[in-house]
Amino acid sequence: MSGPSRVTVLPPTPAGGRRVRVDGEMLGLAHNAADVAEFLRRAGLEIDPAEIASAPWIDWRGTGPEHWTPEPDD
Image (tube, rainbow, N blue to C red; front, side):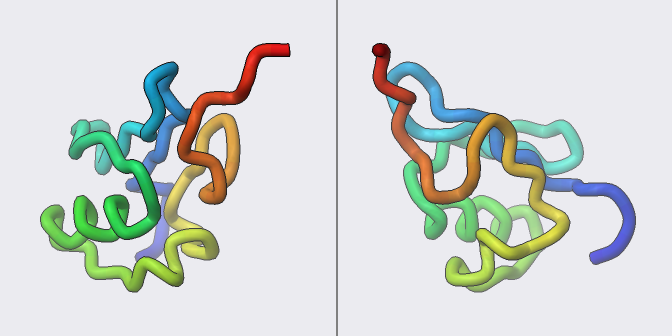
């Protein structure tokens, strides 16, 4: 896939999980990379869950693909 990022993974919600968007359309709330891969598969974008973290066309907002729960309060 070329051009600007079509996939956006938003920061973790206060309850946990991250919202996933493709071309501005909300696909769902992912709790891990496998969930993101499944949402993308349903949207016609096949990707191996192991490649989620390194895909240049996925825009990880707020934090990287290793975080799925909210940041603890200090």
